[in-house]
Image (cartoon, rainbow, N blue to C red; front, top):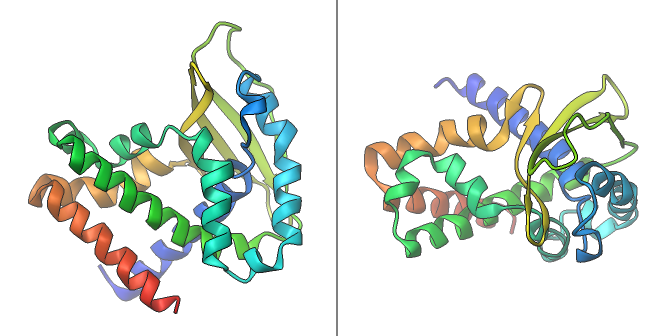
Length: 216
């Protein structure tokens, strides 16, 4: 892969995570656990975006505050095991429980580190929801939204599943690319398939270590 191609890929990845942060981070608190998926996004998105805009520490990339934000407002509303399983692909089925936990842990750190850059890009964006096209008894839906700010609107879609504790996100589509099923899977699955689960864990851990060292 050429250096230029890598830069383009990284730029696109950061853009995906920026818009992902704007809306996925909008899903918050158990008070909305039984709310319809589109209503859940609508009710809390503006509040969270406003919080990011007003928090100078988050905008400056304060990793502790970002970790707290992700843990309290994002992770409770993400089926992280399913998202990681999708990203890893078929090798996930062969992983031990301990390996699956390590994969989730390292994947989470990778996302949080990426959010640290994405959150600093939140300025005047707003979220607009499109009509939800799903039967009332649906247990899986796609919630479609649009991020508006400077430049052209960005289409952002969520795959969500209804769980006993409420609706959970397990994948996000940005600009026609599913984050877990396409973007991450294209990176993670080949490593796990060719070199094994432990090799993927080591790869993610190395990426996180380098990112942490670079952020010092």
